[in-house]
Length: 126
Image (cartoon, rainbow, N blue to C red; front, side, top):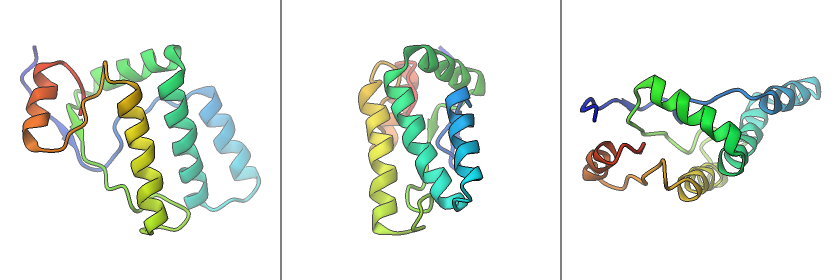
C-alpha cells in the first residue's frame, strides 16, 4: 500500500473527457449557454456516466490512480447556474453523493479526518 496522502482541494478529482462529455459540451457551447449552465449540466452527465457506465468507470479509476490523489475536498456551492446559491449547493452535493454511493467499491465518503486515513488503508478514494 502506498502511504502518501494527497488531497486535491480545488477540484472534484480526476475526470476523463469521454466523447459524450465533449459532444455535450460542444452542443451547449453552440447554443450560447452560459459557462455556469454548461458546467452545471456537465456535472450531471459526468455523475450519471461514472455511476452507470462500467467501461467509462474503469478509465475514471485509472485516471484517479495515475493522479496520486487520495481524497478531494470540493467546495460544492460555486459551480451552478446560480453560483453560490442554495440550489447550487444541493445540486452539486447530490451529484457527489450519487457517485460515492453508487461506487462504494472505489469511494469512501469522508465525513471526518479519520475517514481519509481509512480510505488510504482500504485503497479507496475519499
